[in-house]
Length: 186
Image 1 (tube, rainbow, N blue to C red):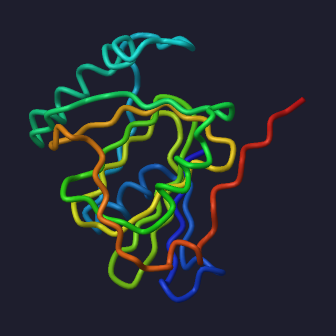
Image 2: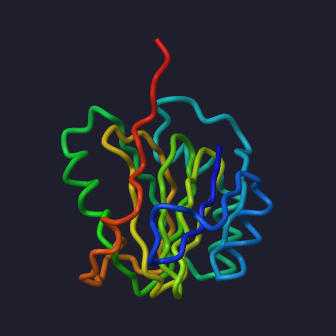
């Protein structure tokens, strides 16, 4: 279930607001310029689907965003708990950084936690299957996929080079909660 928790940047222990209502999450994030939408596949996506099949299933929404925002490149990233580089990849995203372009992710499957540092607030956004988040350029943020990551996400870029981070050097990300690994029922 998608979730938003809003903290004062100086208090990582107690959120000032929490919501699991998708419409309320979209409203709260919209107030600070962050896009949050719900998408549905136009055709079924089966486990093991290729990048082309995943993109085809969401083609109408992808093309809408490309027209609206000039995105030039689209790809699919997929990580699972067995990925040999999962710890290195997780660490890469855990430090506060910005990008010179919007960071747009649509979660086809699984989940990930975007944490945005905007003004004197920290917005922790748990994104799950069906969620699209659009983080505006130059927004301080970090991303956690947990120690046992599982997600498939469509990424859209205006920069054909893809993901390029500018790290802030701040230690704030280490003060806020990490995304715990999902427990799997036996």
